[in-house]
Image (cartoon, rainbow, N blue to C red):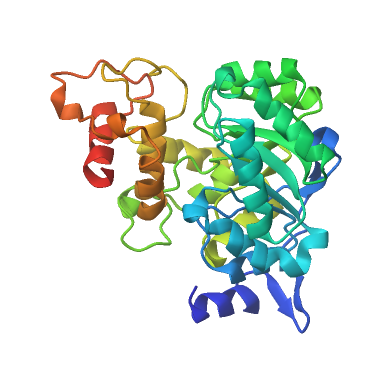
Length: 373
């Protein structure tokens, strides 16, 4: 974070500063109740995955944000430590969520103990079973692990997150009745049935947290980000965030916030709220990103002749091409099974996948293989 950026943020171009810190804002940040948890969370939460500067997190607290999200696997395990240090002086007025991708109870408990140590806290407010796109990815022993963690006082509420598989995961979790909070990808590119599932889950008392709200990012604040100049639209990211939180059943959101400029833009967007003119901005953005951004509709699932998880690979590529976070993309790529990392699209004479939304699948997956393998 540059000094100039910090001065702009504190001096009036961003949130307004006073002698005691951030004392006022463009408008009051709204709060919503996170389902049956009863937690009053700010509609703008703070996704810490791409944050490397703890002072940005501290400014988020000063701005009034009270929900901060990290995970055991972010930044090779270092993200939790940074987040914990930044939030330690404010622990009694913020909510912290973290996640595990463990596949069994023993590993989940080990992850949780490490999470608490790194965060420097005795509990997390929400503990997610992370990136579960099928019911089979959550055996009962993982739900049991969450229950036992709650009884032990290490976790307050139980969550599940997923990037795709929405039409299987929402009904599964609603019927299972063992989940307090769902963290789901949700943005303006997705199908209208997403709203129906969100309403059903919220109606069942499940808290809803939206992620991937920027639909791949493509922000311009990082000079040299691939395709940034060609794809960015004035106000598109703010409009995307406003779209995602426009409905009351989306209780909070966790857009990734890397610097004070993004914090300022996101805060103003949520405080201002959705306007009719925002739809025009998003229409232009959708046209620009359609060849590049996967909407996680599920059409391509199981279609690749070589068994590639196409939607996951396109999401991983978006971390690099959209957010300018190559290291994060590389980290996620290396989590794929070794055999899949070795697959090359050039080995197929033709691609069997034709995306109904116009994504150039073969080109995009081949790019991921080229830059991340």
